[in-house]
Length: 199
Image (cartoon, rainbow, N blue to C red; front, side):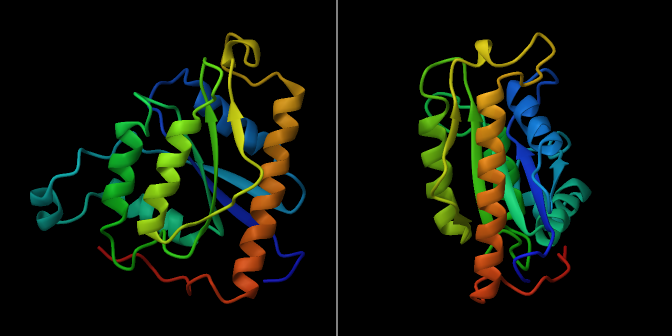
């Protein structure tokens, strides 16, 4: 991978609600990706609650498919709400399932975070908790820039579309930095050889 290699980023939104502003931020990342970067959306709606008995019976297709898409991506973009000062349960559940696949598809991946909330802090606590989870997953989170979108009601329209130009520019800056980070990890030999995710 060199400095001009196209980068594919998989965005995982940590909300199931159709009108979620975090889904709106993920859609804005897709629509405003910088040159040489493509952002694709992943769905976590169909993933059941983690249950060891289900795992013993065979990984659900929805988990295998998400793991495959993570394994094939150059980088991961988490777009997370904040629930009770932390990561939403649906996002943590998806992570818990995927982390049990072999090979573990998160390992060695470049990752970034965006978060949207109606308050002032813009999901700061959830983002830091997600970084802690990433230590065990061997994710390589981008440190800067951070994109914490507070006061969301002033930045999105009634249909959940991001309309604030400054926030769009911040997302573009994060995507550019995340793509560069993925290339640097690859050149340093930090990213794993891409393997098919086995069930």
